[in-house]
Every structure is written in C-alpha cells, then in structure tokens.
Length: 168
Image (tube, rainbow, N blue to C red; front, side, top):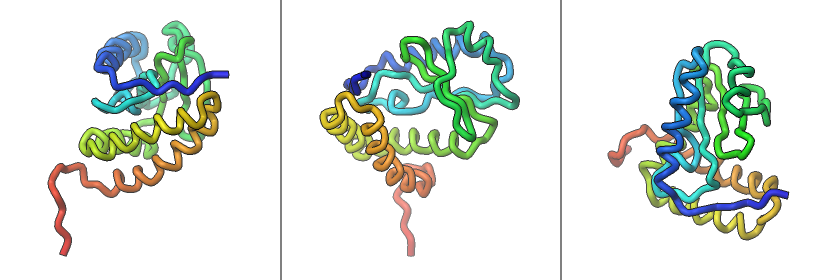
C-alpha cells in the first residue's frame, strides 16, 4: 500500500521538468506542445513529489519510444493517456492538440500561480488529507478532486489577468 506523501515546495521540480522535457522532445517527434502541470508546476505549492508533464500531440504517441524513456501506461481515459516512470518521479499525460481537459489543467495551474492565497489553501488541504488518509490514495484523490472542482470553476471564470475586474 502506497503512502500519501506531501512535501514542501522544492524549486528543483522546475529543473527536473526542464531536464525531462528535453529527454522527451529528443525522443518523440510528433509533440505539438509540452507543459509542466500539476502542483509541482506552481512555485510555493506543497505537493506529492511527482512531476506532471502534459504533451499535446497531433497523432497517437509512439508507445515504444516512451518505453525506451522508461515510461509505462498506467491509465487510459476517454480524452488522454497517462504514463509513469518506474519510480513515479514523472507522470506524462498525453492529450490531443487543444484538448479541453488540458486547457483546464493549464488554466488551473496559472490561477494557482497568480493567487497565492488559493495556492496556500490548497496546500494546507492536501496536508490535511494526507493526515486523514495516509495509506488510502483513492480516498485522498476523491476528496482532493472535489476541492479542485470548486477551484476549477473559479479558474475557468478568471480572465487570466492580475487586474481586479469591476462589474456594473
């Protein structure tokens, strides 16, 4: 049984992403874009120490080449696939170009980067969930996803600007 481990933010995550991005781009040629997503992509946010990387592709990804990079399929959703390295240091999410689910993940990341109070509230919530569900990742994930659904609505309604909007 895997333990839910939240750790304080570590700036090394940005460097690990850059290094892995280079490795992936050298091996795979049909990538339209690549993004650092998830909690490790938000400076100051505490997280599980897994670097989430999203790639946008025009055509199916070459699984053989991913295997050569040390990735294996762990999940196949309707709109994307998730691969992980053996040690789960990296998760690679594969989306078709301009997929709406990916756009939500990027918008959520940018929202947390902009609003430190929301970032800090989410970090504290994850620590609490890890305390409540230390060896129950499924329950941790369900509770976390409910919280994120609420924040996602705010993020999707946010216009991407730091300016205060006045409605009248």
